[in-house]
Length: 116
Length: 111
Image (cartoon, rainbow over all chains, first blue to last red; front, side, top):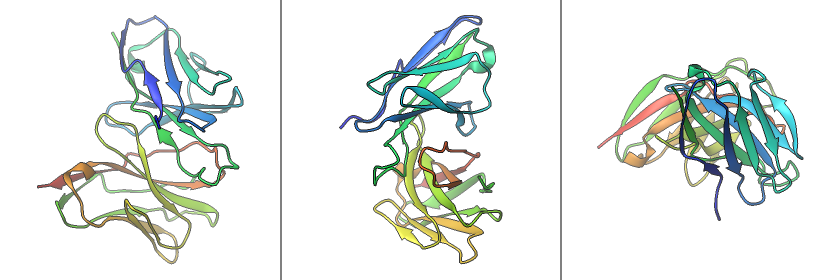
């Protein structure tokens, strides 16, 4: 059973460009969250999607946007990239709240974004 | 979510028990204690969670004090593969609520 799959694994972009990161949740999971992890720090929550809508959002600017598709996969888009956006971007999924095993998030290995 | 305090780093000898402490003195009655770990170059991994009773699973044991103001994650026989950053998170268990990570404890298991 595949876990959470993220693509690409590494990416280099130029300041001012736009980037799209992709996530396929674990089978049976309908909720996808995105986190940003700067070097040496804990992950910071960006936003969460379920039922194809953004449900929660962390303290990130509107340059960060997302989408969830009918198959529960998700994209994270970042516009007007800044050097400070360089980080590991993690996707996490979980089952719906009615699932008896819905207590833990499953994380992917992340996409390492470098902005130059 | 209640704030947590963890030591920034700890060492443990391979084969010995690793005891990772977490202080959460402002925890509310409906908040759970969760532990995740992050091995280098991987995403965080769920370990265990509990409300007030001690919990054990195949990965670890969680000991929560009676006043619930602190807890200890125990890895009974640490191996080199347990070297990771361990995060203690306190949160209301409302399912889809986002996780709030602190800086965690960097556990180094020594051979």
